[in-house]
Length: 307
Image 1 (cartoon, rainbow, N blue to C red):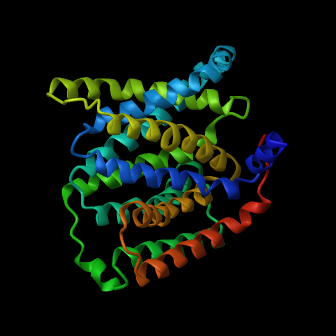
Image 2 (image 1 turned 90 degrees about the horizontal axis):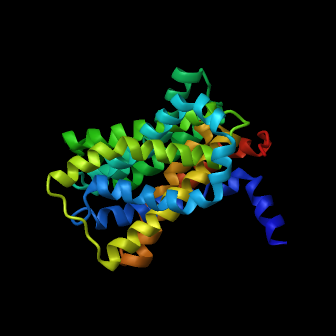
């Protein structure tokens, strides 16, 4: 019964779309809390070491069985590992050390805008009108929250050089999301994910060694290790499995709009865990985000099924 229930959900990506943003909201909260104690590249390496350690026992045989196909796709794997595993995470953690939270929230929400552009440039994939409208409405909701209900306040936002790191990180993830569509159907998705994790860790290795040589101190307290375990299992492994599944079934543009839900779940976590108040502009912004998400994903119900 449980297996049947899980399989039914697995075949409905419009339900799965809600989970990665929830996991990433936790990652955002923890990433900010660790900004002063955990070196950024170390945190990026730690999360993927944890994720790979959990995943490997389940895919080792498949990795060996599909080694020839994996080698054929080595450049795709390297690009996905560079952009999605290494670049996005390391740059995001470096940015969180200096970039104000309001700027991070606003800049992160450019991902659904970047993905259709990247998809068109790389694959000539066009975006349905309803999806484009949903992206615009949800981005309006993000803007309403960031401006605290006063849109003219966006004109006074100041962006520093470090903000470019956030945009560069988001561009990395947009490219990763589009490149995922090039994975051959014969290549097992979990084996592909494990291979991209390994590639990403190899890309991160020289930067991590440089960080350690520069005097970075690794925290080993229970709180830091627990945070890394959460980020590695939920915000890395499970979130990426679900995100990749949704991209395979719905396309990068439709899946990308769900990234705006990170703001919704972050607000919920901040209220529940930190006691931060919820104001009227939060309610309006969240309503716009959910309306845009609904507009963008309604056509997804008619998309093809992928086994």
